[in-house]
Length: 401
Ligand code: CS2
Ligand code: MG
Image 1 (cartoon, helix red, strand yellow):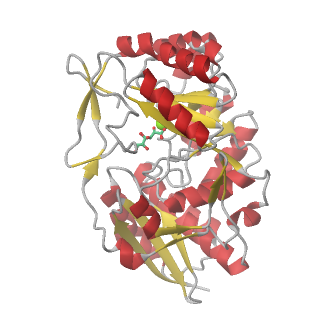
Image 2 (cartoon, rainbow, N blue to C red):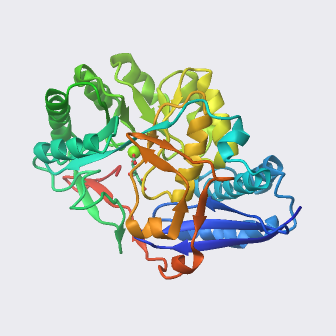
């Protein structure tokens, strides 16, 4: 069996997505998501110019060997562009393997470890009453876990708060400039969680994303000050390039920590996991080298009782979401899956076998990933340049967005 075609599909049905389609001489094809928000064209070029030509003629069943070939064979290892490209190839080859075996991916991985996958979505508001309303709406939809983000008094714009409609961080054109005040945020955040617990009690899991904004000692202070509200997790409390920094946070608080949406490999989370400095690892199928590499991360994490909590924003395509749900259903140490949802146009372009019911998702039983793309419709939505915002402190210093 041989790979005969590998092509990249760029489309913008509501937002940009990069999809890899690999076809075999037996007419079976597989899809992989290669979307890297704000840097889509780099991954598309990496695939088109450097990876697709190498795939032609290879045996699609040699998934592991292809992974090693692309990782070790590039000489230049890791990084979001390389690992997203490898991730897309890996996903597409698993999709082909599932279709050839006539089995859904989760069965190939070893079968379901649970009935379905708990997912969380985002309740956001410009102030506390609006966030409480949004929280109630997600509860009414059946969600058992909800992330809460809220505008902060005195700050013009805050991460995670939409300007109306579904939250979408990227904007068309040049990066938007936002401002940030740690003092105002730290003062306000506990009040948000207090209001949520007062109104809704403790039955729904409560999550929150700090989005890399604090220093380690500030993160420790936040974690300590919100312990009574028993968050499911506090996400990305401080940038994680320096993994040791999390020791300091751990010394001060028992608020659980989730990190890793910007990581690309097992090496990025090695110390965080080995020293049990986090509770949930948020790497994703697309950005962390596909199903083959994510399985390594999950198994490694399991040794230290760290569970998975994969990133699932609307800027990863439904192909990644499909792959993630198969993975989550299998992973023995699954913890939680993010599911932000998609624009209606996106769901017209991608046909998905997955389902949502009462706060849980299931990948479905279609062979492979269970996600297909309508290429004709995709062609009607050409790529549009869009970027994530940048954040500055109130004095103009560039900060972590
Ligand atoms: C986020 C994302 O989902 C999350 O937890 O941190 O919204 C993130 O900002 C985007 O995926 C960036 O592209
Ligand atoms: Mg996040």
